[in-house]
Amino acid sequence: SMEILTNCIARHWFLQAPLFDFDESDVYMSSHEHRFRLFSSVEYEGQLYMTPQNFIESVTMSEPRIRKPWRSLTKQELEKILSDTPPVWKGTSKLFRNLRERGIIAYTEYLFLLCILTKPHAGFKIAFNMFDADGNQMVDKREFLVLQEIFRKKNEKKGRKGDAEKSAQLSMQLYGYQVAPVNSVLKKESQEFVPRSYWEMLRRGASQALFSDLAERADENMMIDTTLLVHFFGKKGKAELTFDNFYRFMDNLQTEMLEIEFLTYSKGMTTISEEDFARILLRYTNVEDIRSYLENVRQCIPDEKGITFEEFRSFFQFLNNLEDFAIAMQMYNFACRSIGQDEFARAVYVATGLKLTRHLVNTIFKIFDVDHDDQLSYKEFIGIMKDRLHRGGRGYKAVERFTSFRSCLKKELAGR
Image 1 (tube, one colour):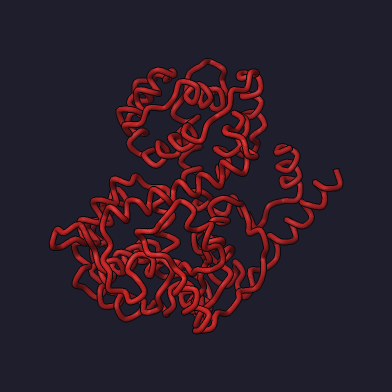
Image 2 (spheres, one colour):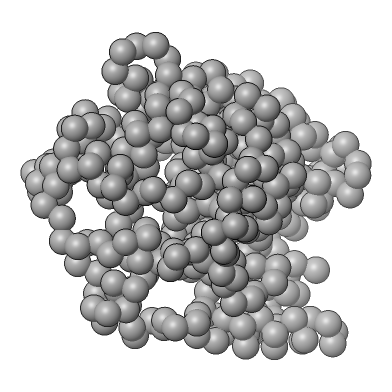
């Protein structure tokens, strides 16, 4: 149809257009850096920020709703925005939707929020305790800034390839200061130790960084308050963050993003269709053609029962514990055994403590059982879900800059 053709022409033009002052030949950007620059909309003293609305779009949409040049904030505008930020004890699962454009989120905070959405919450308890030196279940602003600095160190591109001047400009945009070659404790350590997991890196980094140059840098270079810092530590920055309040914030954030995705498809109803559930799961994955998966659902679940929000939420809570579940799945894989619905439900419960409903498990099987043998293989499920978990952060898949016009047409037609 003319609508499909118009959409593809517009998207193709948009994705080929240079992103303001950078292109691929200037400087290499990670997928997270690229996505942050793509969705951010405001700038203050040379540093880029997302608004809460930008963040919502970055985790629920493949590309920004409206693409405009970055808007410069004045000091007065920023002060007004921060003065309207509610305290953490007033947090709700509508915080980001209520704030919309009235807030700023720095790049390190963006990485931190993504981690909350994609990692087991139990791991944050460990990280929190690393900074709770006196054991009072609270951390202060300085300790939190060190935690953010460790996230920056984990994600920063060392020896960034490309134009040196553009690389310095990119660092200024993302971090608010030029990232010079660093001989910090973490860099020395990384030469002789490769962490097995994100949390192992975080624990080791935290234990060595609290009184190192990272702590000094966190104090010296992150002086601009953000919505998150004011939300957690108050307008004067003197409040302390309890783990209970932090855990509630994590839970609210995850609920809010899931509600937004769910409501997009539920159209005011209490359920979404099994086919729409499949569409959501296959977003941001390496599956080129989702039609065969959607056809599986249409054929195998002809009588639509629907997926409730609680089922939807429980699945994504399970997805955040995918690494633990993958171990259980590999046991079957190594034994050359496929896995049936009962074994799947049991493996989920053993690995995560979550009980998925029988209908949800059946729907998952019908989506991913491409061989139609009522068995789920490790490759069919884990491989695809690892991509989905990162919500577009593993590569340019969701915002491919060199997507061909033909593949765009195929995707538009497949989604109809």
